[in-house]
Length: 310
Image 1 (spheres, rainbow, N blue to C red):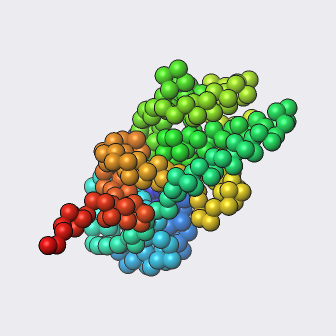
Image 2 (image 1 turned 60 degrees about the vertical axis):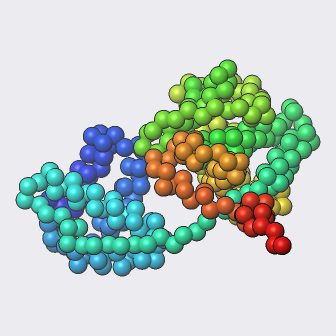
Image 3 (image 1 turned 30 degrees about the vertical axis):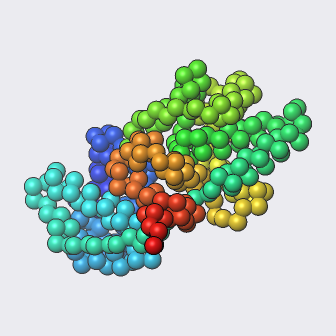
């Protein structure tokens, strides 16, 4: 068994037997190609059984420049391939059985925006819209961009989920968005803010002739689906125009959505469902409230407030 044939077989298994989504397959392909390039010995490339824990340790050392989360993903992908190979072949023993890896993530709180910053962005967007000639394409693109920003904040969806939306996933009559998350998991999010619903309606009215069934809901000037990179650039430009001195990405809207809901005392389990997290452990990062909220809690809720000395 060559390493290349093993990789091909494993990716086929992931695609057709495990039915993993395209993004996951692309990530696995990239990670496994990286390992293939790392293994320089033709002898080992031609016989996957010769890969041992020494080679894995050397590869792990090479990955040390990456973030811990990235290293974990790449090694988990490799381990999954060897586990699959062991399951399919009685005479193969995974080298990971002889390797113990313990990587500790550095805990970093996500960047979030406060209400004033969200208001600042939306004010800038709507004011800019009022100054654009309705006959120009710029007006249409601004309507689209406003809808993207409104939807990111209203639903907390991932940028990849937003770019995968199709016209059939948006039901304005019921006020419901169907989202396909990681692992092809489907969830329904209700859009209850009238401004967001109006933005969606405005977008559909302007782009109805270009939006087709089974095609991306958000499109660019050429009629192609809006890419995640385009949304990132869009957000970066509007943050700059809003004069907000933070590194804001589309994912920041997701963090902000969750954090602000939590600060309004929404139960963590509801937030988990809205975000599409499979484990509440992932959602618990938002329990680390920001400093302003912390100060408010300690000023108003701390029991020392009730103690008066005689």
